[in-house]
Image (cartoon, rainbow over all chains, first blue to last red; front, side, top):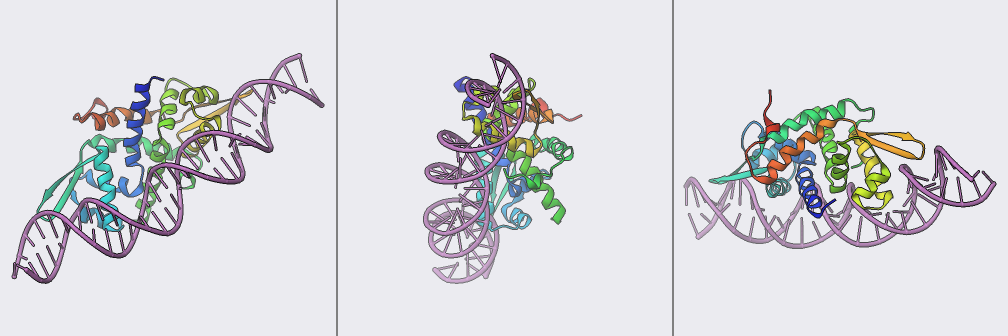
Length: 106
Length: 106
DNA sequence: GTAATAGTTGGCGTATTGGCCAATTACCAA
DNA sequence: TTGGTAATTGGCCAATACGCCAACTATTAC
């Protein structure tokens, strides 16, 4: 395992980690239909606006989304939409398993 | 957002979370070439054998891998290989490029 | 100017994760 | 049985992650 390979796997894991949260995933799925302001995403996930904002900043830093300011609103959108096509495979992992993922401490 | 939708997004996030660690991702990529014993995976990631074993248990619980005992060794293999096709898209997020081939759907 | 709305940032407490060590289990061979 | 190797499990501690509140910035309207 070269040092460069190690570095690559760390960067990849970082991107995946940025998706690995229920609220963040929910927002990414909503953004599949087009850009949304923070206020809409906040209503969607139901957490504090500051919490939502931090989730979005994290995903922006990871390269998953980008933003656009317009008046009072900040609109977020997917930067690389293919990430959502992965969900079919994730569902395949869930559908074939004996233990439901809700029992997994991860 | 219905309760069922919330539950689904939590389960999906759980699977993704199980991939979201450099050592785990490294092992998943190694398993793309076929099954490996824990001892080989331990050499690959370079962590304590107990740490590696816990990572594997976690991925097994999430449905990502399955194992097979043979004598002294436990061999792990991918349970749903499509998860690795996602890596092209992850790299696209990292490289700031448009959309990789993985994103073209038939 | 003030007020109102949208969003970000800092701080802090709690919960989760990840790592190693030590102990234990499982299997095989002499 | 004894010993050796492979792997898992429990415990403990340090480092992260998450959530809310409060404070602050930015923009618009009056």
